[in-house]
Amino acid sequence: MKTSFTFLFLLLTAHIFACKCNTSDLENSFKNADIVFIGNVYDINTSYKTGYWNVENSLSKVKIDKVYKSLGDDFKSTEITFFGQQFNSCDFIFKEKGKYLIFGYFDPDTTFFYTSLCSATKLTESLDKNDYLFLERLSKEDKLKEINDAGSEADIIDFIDRYPHRDVTNLKLSNENLSKKIEKQRIFFIAVISVLLFVILFSIWMYQKKEIVNY
Image 1 (cartoon, rainbow, N blue to C red):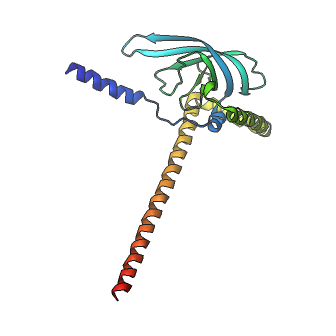
Image 2 (image 1 turned 45 degrees about the vertical axis):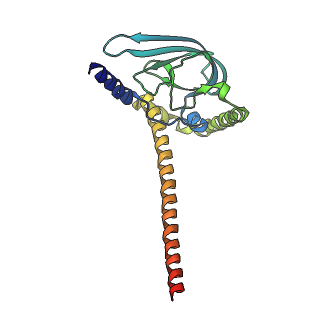
Image 3 (image 1 turned 30 degrees about the vertical axis):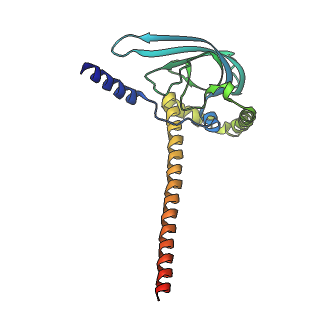
């Protein structure tokens, strides 16, 4: 009985803390990230807090190799630290060292960077030539956009000051995933209606054909 209760408790907690989002593609991940780069994760320090929950926290040191999107012209760092925690269920926690394409977000509350399971952060071994070309294109478009949007910078700063950064990022990713889900449902609905309409028209045609034959 005790074993069954423990198993049920683990299932419930796993469901509660599971990240509820679909992984974004390169373009949407790029758009939402503060910084996008190829980096080498060379040190992973994982710790556990013992208490009512056993919570995994991770500090990962990353050496920047190639930047596609920067925090700004004054960002000159060649190494940054990523913080991930289990309670933030969508945090991407690096499990192995290696070279990654990272879509990072800066958290002003902790001054650490973090990345999300909802983004396209991944090992570079899974990228192909077209992915790199696409990232270069996105990088050029982003630089042009920065120039065009320079006049609205004050509004952006005001928005960031009023809302926690992590919440804003998660909200944007959630909205994108919701839009994709709605679009898929719309296409499915249209397909179902089309099939039903075809069946009805075909049935009418068969009925009329039968009536003509009988006549």
